[in-house]
Image 1 (cartoon, one colour):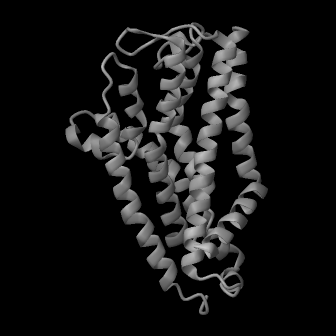
Image 2 (tube, one colour; image 1 turned 60 degrees about the horizontal axis):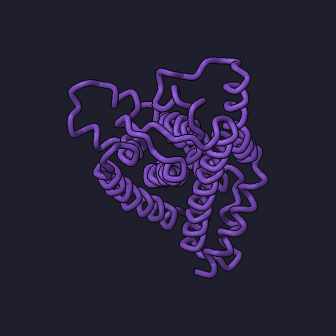
Image 3 (cartoon, helix red, strand yellow; image 1 turned 120 degrees about the vertical axis):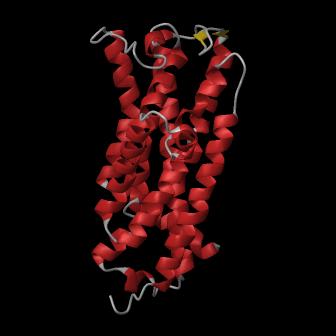
Length: 272
């Protein structure tokens, strides 16, 4: 495990030097305050046709929940792709596998360390986006009660706690998309496929979820758990969707990561 931790440290350093990762960090940090500023200056009306869009000027946590709803559809798969989609493919593009494998680090060390780096980075970006959006919302609308999805009023302190828990509930599907990015990066050896693949998959699944008559199939889509946080904000807390989503995402991790690891261990680096 010590070898994997060394790889983890250096992979985090490498991620921190990449321009696209820095751009994503700035977007997560400054995007919600920019949205709050636009709403506060009345540059545009509240997005009343979205979940919690009509309440962004009435309660601080509402802005964070609005951002969460949008992020679950479009942003979080992009975060997974940007962070994890290039971790392995970059070694192929630069031809550095022979070099990194001669530095007393096994292929297992490299695989575990890179995956841990991807998980660490996406969790950090998710936390940054959650805290930035919550702070922006509180500055915009203050600590007034939040209207729940059942029409009930939620006390300010409890609303903040539920908002943070809502962000936590989207972690399993985010890790599922991270596993998709890792697998694509290893199997295709293409940074384009690793970065764009999770985004295109998320878009396809979002479109598929809009098709009527899917029934139970909708629960098997990796994007469905992104809306499991709705169950926290009803008058009667319902976590069934979250538990189903957690099992679904665990299956993705259990299938995709061993598949990627096996492909990396069997790769003929010398021939390449």
